[in-house]
Image (cartoon, rainbow, N blue to C red):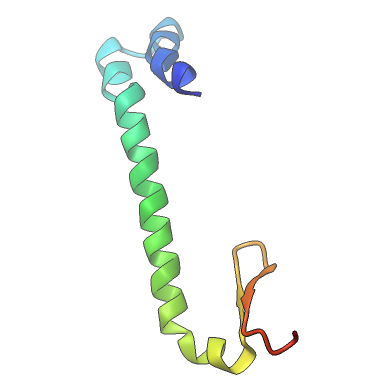
Length: 77
């Protein structure tokens, strides 16, 4: 995976994209960008979970992005 990210600017230059643009959005900056986006999404999800904490207490379940319960209160056990 990291090797593909590292050689991505070379492929971009061969496709006709300017070299400066390809190097700017090259391997390291793409890794940083993906990391920041994933961290931001995790923080937003945590904020929304805290905001709807009352609903969590009523149902006893936390549903993830897929709709599958991720945790339960243990009442069903």
